[in-house]
Image (cartoon, rainbow, N blue to C red):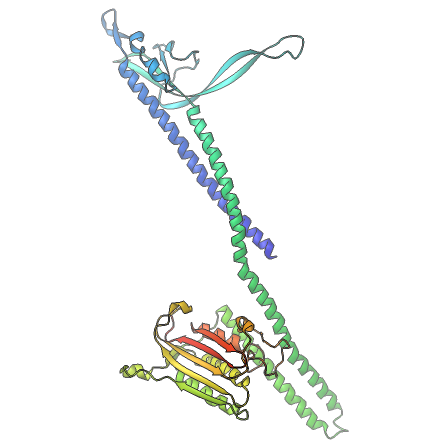
Length: 482
């Protein structure tokens, strides 16, 4: 499917480029051809002006009203002058009869006064003896065509027409460079089309890579979602069937009521887990589609982290894990009361930020062994370097969640924020040897955390060493860019 789409993109790209190149080449050809024709016409008109000025006009029989052209004196030098430029001269009488010409044979073309230039086709008949194909010899006539560019000028003296001057130039002065230009343009277009086709194939492949990756992620997401949804649904169905079977025996067994209650509690937990999974999927889908209409308002991040830390301390008292919150105080040089009061305040969505840091802290607590430490640090940073990939240059708040847990393998870090991804290939919900599962055990916790951070135009990073611990760093801008 993707190869077919890639091939179509390359073909369309090449075809459109070829059409544009063809239009461009046609424009260049027409421009050059018209320029050559204009140059020849200018040359012919220039020759006409020179010859017309050099004509020797004489009165006829000393009559001041009648004149004639002295051909010998007028065209004696012109024949040698125009011969080198491939220009031929013809002089016609006022009645249109050819009187003098530099051509070896007359053209037999009627006179048409035209100063703008015209192209004429002259057909010459030449006789040649063909080979003896039979016993009789045959005389064969071959017609050859000659194209000329001509300018005809009527020469007058007062109201008397003295004759007509026609200047001819071979048309091959236009056709020869025109044909060479056509060949060069065709060769250039052919090479360009080949290059465009190759680059189009390469670029379409590059363009299809994100589509292919998205398609593969969608397939993986669908498979993972189906797996995650199938397990609780199967368990719910099994417990309901068992409960219904036990209900039928309620009249004969006194313990059925207790078993029935336990099975309904299992169904309730599974239903809650399934609802949580569906909500997580719905949240990610809304973030991906951009249809989320969250309301952003000033949020004191220090107060938010205090609430989250207090809640998490109540959930893991038996593991004896030290959970601490460290707030970096503003510098002593800062004296603005308003800024000091809002030192840890940013624009964001309170509920989403609570969910973000609950996931990260609960994740750290879940995979930190008894007696370990989880430290949450909050600091305000000025002027982040753009090399970090952030899209903002104003002040930011940075939160670090560090633990002394089992750590994450280096090869798992690039895929850590993928949906449903866990380091543990068994995809269990209870084992403690993976730091990638969220508190819900569905493998969506870190994906949701990344989506929330990106929604707040922030950046999240992770550093981990197996056996030593893991540190998640979240950097959020104070104000959001529109």
